[in-house]
Image (tube, rainbow, N blue to C red):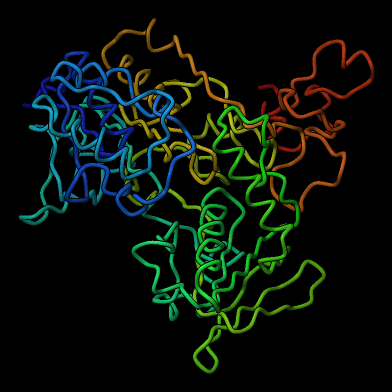
Length: 476
């Protein structure tokens, strides 16, 4: 009979967080087996390699991975440099995937189909925690099962984008027009320039991906006559995407928002707010986009040639259909993490330090980490994932002191206030838990005793709090 402790730890995904997990496993004397659906490590990064990150190298390199690389003569880039996604891949992830300690454990071109327990479906309990995990994958030679003692799921969300439809499902006609829709961040000024030059492009979304694409389109429009830009957002409050400017702990992120605000103010793009898309229709070779407005009226955007859906992404929960996992019912994040990151409650780009305890599921030995741990919540940073996997691996190694010593130092966004983060859902002056808005830079809903003494409702004022707030979201 196979002994559980003789088996490797399965790492699902060879992106930055997955390879960091594998590095920590090796450092702890645990054997990883790494599955990556792409033909190279960090394959998702290659799809937006043209994009310059707003986090400098100091936040992008995991400590255990650095030690492993430096053992083989690697030299880290300057900490304050801002890499593109391609540079992160070429200068860090690719070399990391090739160090002998990890290269032999890496299985490229292996797509995860399902994760379960050997001999156990979801219902059966007795002896469950002693059974190995079964990882079913589709590889170059067909489907196969691999056994593991534990699973670190770093499959992310990038390859599972949200649809354009404001109802959470594809807009009518979206599937039929898929060849004219790009999800994520297409290289509009480079490799895909011909698709957008001289065209009328609609960008949907109010996050950093939308901002980057809008600015790239604006540069294209300066050099190619007939190129026009339309921007549509589901809400009408743009403070989150414009960001904290000079107050942002990541200057490049702050500048991105300032440049987008200047573009909006310049009148060089057509802006539609409160635009909740419901249908796409092709007419005379162009796309007509239909939305339902909050007042019940319909509005259309006519003569669109291309659409960029910068609407975020969601985790693939089908992988763990036969396991005992518990997800937050609306974010689809790890259940215990949800109150800390819910964008309905706060707009902070940072999150309280968290590790193996917040990432654990009822299925002992399974952990979702990285962007997947956040579910549909935005603003995930690689540094968060690196600390997550450090804690999880320490737990798997039995070092509870290190596993519980979670420390996370992230740069502030400069827009951490108490307004609800979803656009159009907060009235001016409204604060978390029904309290008054607090100045930017003040911790979300962290009212101290002096403030409470002035009559401001704190988190104990349950009558003023939302259901999520009662779960503790305000007290971060």
